[in-house]
Amino acid sequence: MQTPDTARLAALAQHYGTPLWVYDADTIRQRIAALRQFDTIRFAQKACSNTHILRLMREQGVKVDAVSRGEILRALAAGYDAAGEPSGIVFTADLIDRDTLATVTEHRIPVNAGSIDMLHQLGEASPGHRVWLRINPGFGHGHSNKTNTGGEHSKHGIWHSDLPAALDVIRQHGLQLVGLHMHIGSGVDYSHLQQVCGTMVELVQQVKAHGHDLHAISAGGGLSIPYRDGDASIDTEHYFTLWDQARQDAAAVIGHPLALEIEPGRYLVAESGNLLAEVRAAKDAGSNHFVLVDAGFNELMRPSMYGSYHHITVVPQDGVQKPEKDTVVGGPLCESGDVFTQGDGGVVLPRRLPAASVGDLLVFHDTGAYGASMSSNYNTRPLIAEVLVDGESDRLIRRRQTVEELLALEQL
Ligand code: LLP
Image 1 (cartoon, rainbow, N blue to C red):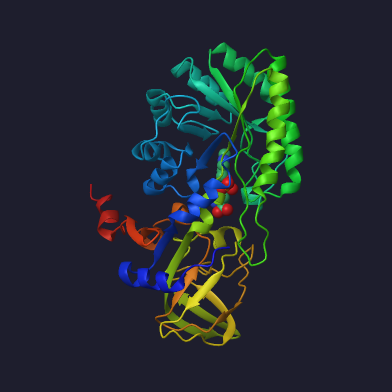
Image 2 (image 1 turned 90 degrees about the horizontal axis):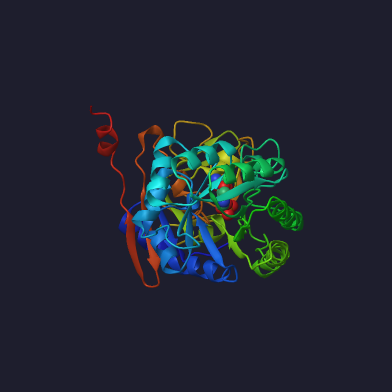
């Protein structure tokens, strides 16, 4: 968990207005540095896809993953291309729509396929295209059932026993196999890791047995971050050691060195970001005390969607911290689930917070991942601004959307 400089955040809120996303460039650089042992760090941009963040990643030598045509165009706009190996951009999905197929074909962007149908469609449109196979190993783990991407309830990846069939389709269309990929979930429990690594080596054995070659394996993403005080930080050294062993075992099977990729989203950006919101009302409802801010779940979706915890700091307007009281923090949306302090299933969970009143600032910590990128226009609320802090400087990296821009889409 990051401890933000609240005086600075208050000044930024004053200058740019609220609600506001603020990211810290140095924190991102530090997280990248902690994963440098991997041959390729591939940023899962779904966590935070602002092109200025992508540019920062590119300047640090980080490659990028895209999961939609829009994310491919973002990566291209940030200066990435698909030349060379490893490719600057990889497209990962379980299906490919027609427009995206045309775009990956045009830019020769390698495709990490999660279904055999994708391989057929790609092979017909773009013979010789580079592909990865995303395998569902039959088990998975996530911080919530909604972020577990392995096992038979999950729509993700090619089921492990279908690997030989996928390899046949690759041969049939003359596709070029780059590597095998596994991502079993987001916010993983590391006790699974040994099993994941062992499964990867077994899958590589099958690739070899079918007479195919490959150049890389990908560990996927899923690395957790400490959202609560006292949560452990991931031991990236240990994480690398286990995957490096899998890479060496797989290389021994294949008969030549293999590159090792990692594909984190959350780990690289979550702790770099804060959401700033202003208290606009405070009221009681029976035994509950509500503090209502100008940001809602259309900005920060995670508490409503997964019951996720984000630490909240109250920055009092008058500089005087008040005694704590049990507080339910909510937003402006016309929906009861628009509450930031809730558990899984929508139960309101009051939190001990210093008493806050109108004009105070609330800082929602560790919101750099799956914050802005999961925002919506619900209740006709325009997307809010994003600011990047770099050392002493700060700059707007996305201006606020306007309601007029939303209405323009409907002026036909
Ligand atoms: N690679 C693939 C193929 C993925 O599907 C994902 C995340 C990642 C990498 C990056 O996972 P990360 O390192 O960020 O855990 N909205 C949820 C997380 C959903 C993740 C979906 N896939 C949340 O706010 O927790």
